[in-house]
Image 1 (cartoon, rainbow, N blue to C red):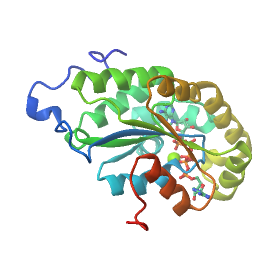
Image 2: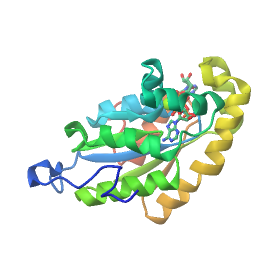
Image 3: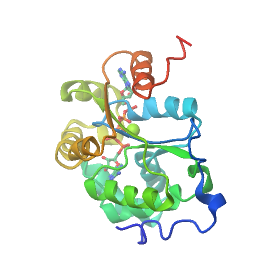
Length: 216
Ligand code: AP5
Ligand code: MG
């Protein structure tokens, strides 16, 4: 999915649509990568509010589509229930529709996307086409046994042990290669996801070069 493609079409025609002013400090485009249950959603809500950018969770978007019984939701259901990744084409079309909205032009926090190298390449192509490349890829690192403990307590439909095992498998095989992808581009920052939610949040802020709200 190159940029001028089904993903997102052509870059905007008007300079005013290009979004961020070069050098503007608060503009942030970031992705949060981590295994299921790492705390991506928990931390993204807080981080997005702190940075003043929209929080886009592909998991939430897909669950909304399933609840609304849209064609996308009906197609995605079988994959999600089995703990498998939804095919790239479906996810990319969905994300394209969202990230081309004006509120994403000055920044966005992507939670759970990209999850494959193909998705990462498509995102890069889109952002480079706009002249607004990704700033940071944050890894939230949590070991598998902690993932299992957290999701066992939560009890979402796809938190059943067999499904969690498959979600972890998908993470290790399809998503972890993204860490190298972003490391090679100098964009990766890794953060320990163990500890209290406040501790993890403070680490994420430090990784972004921002001071903790408690310390400022
Ligand atoms: P998605 O909804 O993205 O699920 P996930 O990434 O597998 O994991 P979660 O969202 O459950 O975990 P999280 O890291 O957000 O942690 P959370 O904050 O919730 O995706 C679901 C499915 O959709 C996928 O399996 C796939 O099928 C499909 N999908 C989505 N995106 C896709 C894509 N791009 N491509 C293809 N398919 C896609 O926290 C988890 C629990 O831990 C909570 O109970 C929370 O309270 C707790 N917790 C959080 N932080 C802490 C802490 N510090 N200490 C203790 N507990 C904590
Ligand atoms: Mg989540």
